[in-house]
Image (cartoon, rainbow, N blue to C red; front, side, top):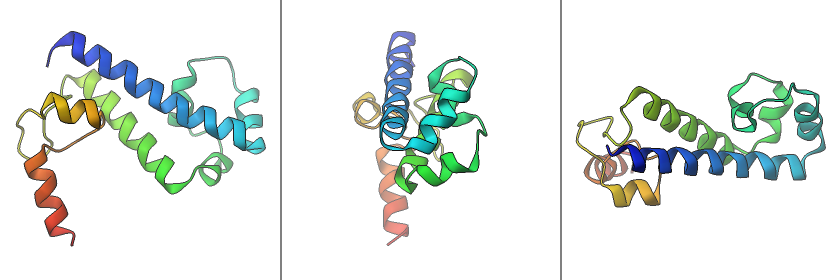
Length: 118
């Protein structure tokens, strides 16, 4: 995968994660207190830390899934596996990654999973 594209996707993923956490901080006093008590560090790493059970309670299940998917995508970037389908190993089309930057499966494998889960 092209380094410029990968860097662009890393930035997009970190921004998406930051948006989720910013919204949580703005709407949840318990989570805001947790964040304010932390040592200053990269805000994008906040959800990766095992801060407190209250954070998990404050996050909605969709937000938890998205943060986990974003963290997994960031990990794949770090490992040099970003943009490869986890099932078949083929390259995930750039258009799909631009639409869903944390996509794990190519379109064909995703369709197969959806058919199987019906």
